[in-house]
Each structure stands twice: as C-alpha cells, then as structure tokens.
Length: 39
Image (cartoon, rainbow, N blue to C red; front, side):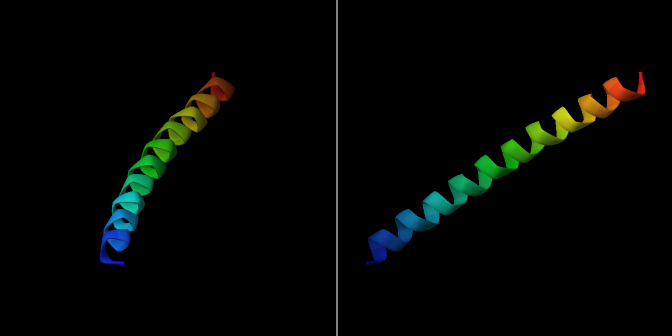
C-alpha cells in the first residue's frame, strides 16, 4: 500500500511537470498566433 502511494506520488509529480511543459508550449503557440495576427 505504501509502495503504491509512493509510485502514485511520483506519477503525480511527473504529470505536473508534463502539464507545465505543455502549458508553456501552448502559451508560446498562442503568443505566436497573436503575433502573426498583429503583423
């Protein structure tokens, strides 16, 4: 049970990092889109 919990916590942190990266990439794409619309 404890081992499972540890694995779950590790997974959660990995998902967190993944989401952060995705968010950054997404933000960059939106900025690029806005940039292209402005110019």
